[in-house]
Amino acid sequence: MTSDDCTKQHAELDQHVQRLATNVAVLDEKISAAFKRIDEERARTETLQKTVTALEVLTTEVKRIGEEQARQWTILNEEQIRQWTSIDTLRMKPAARWESVIGQIVALLVAAGVGILLSKL
Image (cartoon, helix red, strand yellow):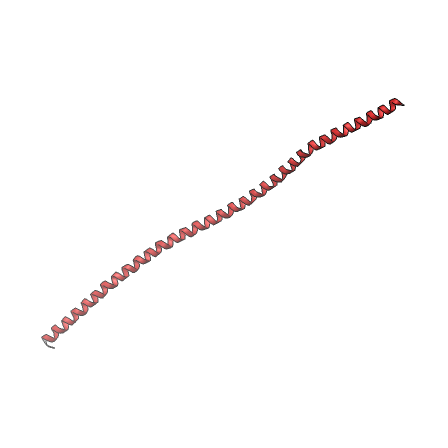
């Protein structure tokens, strides 16, 4: 091998080393970008997990509130029925009193009429 051949081969090897160095630099950039995307996805996944957990808690709480509200509505409806029954009872009392008064007046008139008839005999 001649000196020119060695120089030429040395130059080719230098070019090949430079291309490899360039490829390594490009691969380093791509690997760094990939790790950055992985870190971003990890952060998004953690945020999503927190959101899902919060949603599960909210769902449980909304369900509990709905059940409590249904229970309260049942209690209110029962109380309203009791109040309406009491109101109807109170409405009937004056009518019953008037019926009693009228019954006593009729009995008094009948007794007076019988008394008058008996006094004339």
